[in-house]
Length: 115
Image 1 (cartoon, rainbow, N blue to C red):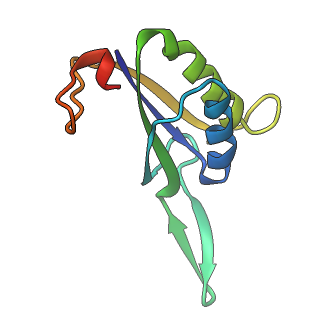
Image 2 (image 1 turned 30 degrees about the horizontal axis):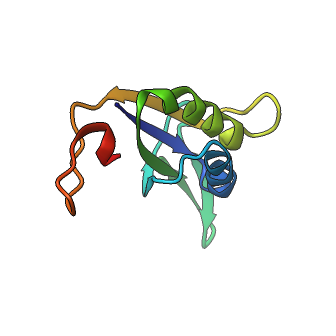
């Protein structure tokens, strides 16, 4: 079992959800997050004053999958999250973490059956 954490642009969320549905990944958690990478923020003008905005709004997806769904899930996130054919700085990142256990609260099922 793996926990896939993806950080994407908010405007790509619907495309990523559609791509995940195509590969039969329909369970996910979505969290609004802020951060920066290579973009290092941007400058905005507010009431005539320039303000440096260091944190950029992103969306974090948390998806628990069994081993056979890892690569299809990653491919779907890349397909839906990439801007254009080549992508752009700021499109996001995907992290794949080992998941020791999963427990369904309602039934008490554990492991792969609980996902």
